[in-house]
Amino acid sequence: MPKIKSLKGRPESGIVTVLSLLFSVVALYYLIAVSSLAPLARGVLAIAALLVSSRAIIIYNGLRQLFGAYLLGGKAGVNFVDALSRWRPGFWTAFADWGLVLSFGLASYFLFKKQLSKMMLLFGLLSIFVIVYAVLPSSSIAFQFINLPQITSQINSAAPHQPTLISTVSMYLLNLLLLVGGFSLFILATLVYSALSIIYGILAFSQSVINNAPNYGIISSQVPGVAPILPGITMPLFAGIVTLAIILIVHEFSHGILARVAKVKLKEIGLLVLGVIPIGAYVEPDERAVKRLNKEKQSRILIAGISANLGLSILTFALLVLVATYLLPGFVTTKVFITATAPNSPAFNVIPAGAQVLAWNGHIVTNLTSLAAAASSIPFTGVLVQTDKGNYSLISNATGKIGVSLSQTRGPIATLSGSIVYFIYTVLSLSFLLNFLVGVVNLLPIPSFDGWQIYQLLTKNKKVLGTLAWLAVLSILANVLPWIWAH
Image (cartoon, rainbow, N blue to C red; front, side):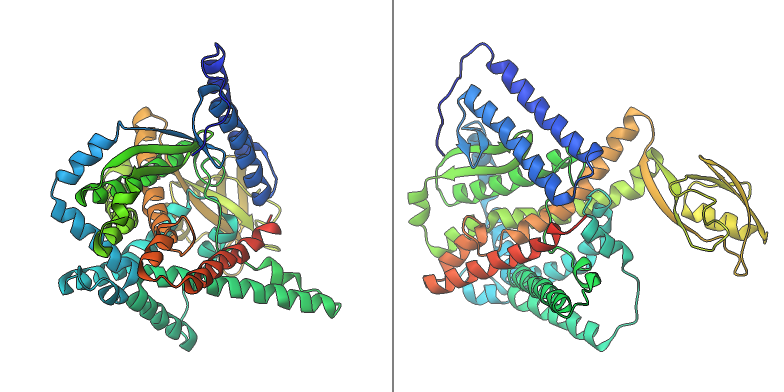
């Protein structure tokens, strides 16, 4: 973690730091609220602005830097981590072992046989299916705060369908992957499958071009398998920063706790920041002492961060359910909007898209449920729709409809308490999904990832490690390709 030439101590240092942070915020805001550039271009510009901001902060404060981001660290957090490690060391050990089962499924029992009990194996396998079938199905809650059009459009357009032979086989295959190899095999297999699908689509499109009959539908239907998660660009700025900070601190502190349980000294704890956005955290243990530990203790230290992220995903989901059920309803307002009108329908070219529905046939509309009740309460052929853009009197068609597509949004009531409750709801929504994603992605066998270090611990065959690393990296690059032509 090198230092660069510093201008620390100059009178203007504080002013430059504040201006640099403001520059980050303004640049992010412009790219969110004003710019109409494609997502990839906005992401590149956002990263460039954050790098410029970080550079100024590094130079005028004499901070250490890593890949353009600055490090805020010291020994302040070491005592806190040390105290946590002394609280029920057995719990932290079991917590790490639980993470090993989540990460490697049944294979964990053979890879870490000396440290895993059959009871922990069973509990871990059960936890995998609780996450997949009880927690993740609610990911649409989080995606209302994450603006990834190419991905969220697929989620929102997914319609219930009758099971087919292919879907049934796919479900059983998914369960088999999770059972045998846990989330490590699942994430790698998912990335590879998605990459192959994108490559196949590109080749099919290329063939159509060669045949002088370009099928642009093939290429436009390709969905990126990975996406940028940037506060202010693809998710709310302040809620996103808080969520990322929680994820990173919990992840790294867990590494430190298990290191201290293994009697390894910690040199430093800190945060890696790019502009105003925390992008990483670090715990610096005595590496020589770690390497002298046996395989069981090393594996627990390495897996601790992933265990923490997956555990926090479940915890924040439970809190989210409680907040959404008992606290949120009294602090939010719901609005219904007309998103589009069907061609040749009574409402076509009459009611503008984006109009908020205030009342329907004289009944106040507060959500889609109240609108449905209003539409069915009186069998009128004439429909009076009151919106914020005007009132419209229409005659329904033969099916009793006027041809509008509707959507519902929720937001905080215009009070301080409403804003606070909705902010908490947003952070919990983001946290339960992003903790899961950060945890499983860290399992990939890519250098500097926790998964890479665990694979190194399991095998010394460099060819196998190299092949897995290239497979993961190339799959990620293939999954990024659709963002190039995304709009």
